[in-house]
Image (tube, rainbow, N blue to C red; front, side, top):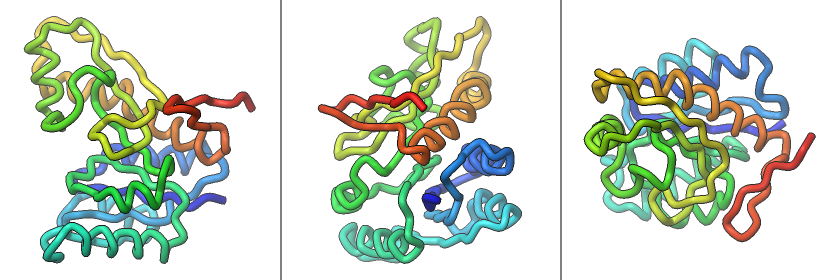
Length: 209
């Protein structure tokens, strides 16, 4: 059984999707073992507590430099014997040392079809504002492994979502979450926990069961 840590900063809707998937036995071989928040008042912590998942708050402001924060983060993850880290709306930078320690074991969900509308500065509503401003007809979500390049890691899963006439960034954001993020994130976590994902030359291959 692999131990999963979910890193959060806000409401935790993607965390809830993972909690629901676990309760429905859709993550065979994996267990949500820790929810770590960068903010003490994040509602995601309440979701975790209600599901009986251990929680921890690790605020960047509590550390004088990035290196110290990264060391504390790695220590917390190792103490909990974490095998897979999931970034689910985690709004705090993690350094290269963390990425290297958990190489191809950190998943992130991004609300666009990478490589569109991603990278530095593209997060939250900004992604959907940019998509609408460009007039794209299809957007979606991507789950990828995290590397040193912002939103540049190997892609695990993607799902398209249609843009509709009259969409606002808020409406589009919710549709992308509901139709894509909440579906492909638990699926990617399940694939990892089943040992079916392999990264070869920067490309993710999914082995058949």
